[in-house]
Image 1 (cartoon, rainbow, N blue to C red):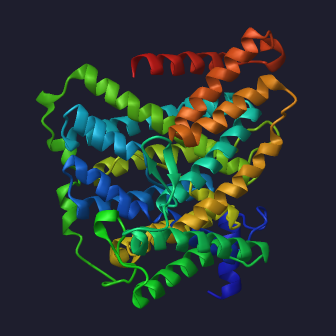
Image 2 (image 1 turned 60 degrees about the vertical axis):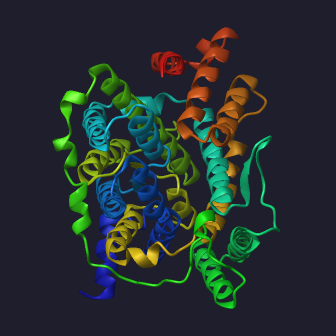
Length: 464
């Protein structure tokens, strides 16, 4: 098959011309999305290790779950959204379910599996799609902006530019002291990376975000070779020079694959299990919806009524991926906000997702190489993507206070609560209450579903 025929086939499958994109753009976007998500391959095993899970097994399960979920998203919806085990959900899995509540990781995986099955049913019955469509356009724009701030905040934290502080909660990194050659240099390189990425984007260089990541990584390697950057494991700063490139040992997966079938079911308290499952269900539902709203809004994929065409396929892919991930041995797999980096790089179709998925599959072989990419190299991409998503604030009507105030609360809640779903919760509750109490219910056409969502969100805060 000639190159022209291949391009024609891809155009027919993914409708490239219809979406004003090209094969080259989609490939670059797919690589960019993967590069900004690759940190999950290192972070997820470390978090789930706190639940006494095997790190090697979780790494392979994470890569495979991401591959399966992203492929399903591309095939079922033709959207450039990528999936992976969700941040926040993995922490709840390890530190709350397996830590505070004392359940085994096998039982926690069972809860994730059941949650995925319920989601599949909800996706097939249009419940999740109805929830998406019920959220007003103002809040959808606010969600996009909030996610942008959240992504930028994650980038600043990953690079250790913003760090913990006892009195003010967060503060800027101190560029002096004994950790300067590890944490300090990493933060400086991240800031340099932001400038490099910004310049590339301003100059309209194709793949500017990806080149920014690679440039920052190369600078890190040079600094380590010259002795300016000194790895410090205790400070979470590792060597950026690959010591090993490939590994074909997949035997570790057997330590988690299908293990929830061997769980001690006698130890399960029915009420506790329902609460655990509902918590996974709740956070996954609104994290996914928030991500779909935010990223699709940024890419102008929503129709004139604020609805996302083919959303049922996207939600179904997310649901199946969750159950598949549980079988493999990882926490809830969900649509990733980092998909915005690929969209910003021009990705508009499932071809972007196919490329990202293939790279996740390759990561099972090249994991030693991919895991060497430092967080300070991917942080600039997250910060710049946050800037891009902030642009949707212009779609919010700040002259209408009944829309603007709930939108503001939604935006500010996401980075400050470190949760997309909390931002949506606060946005939905405040929008419904403010418009109801001020007598704007008829004018704003508040749907029954918005009332139901608001009540459920309030009950969540009372009982969970």
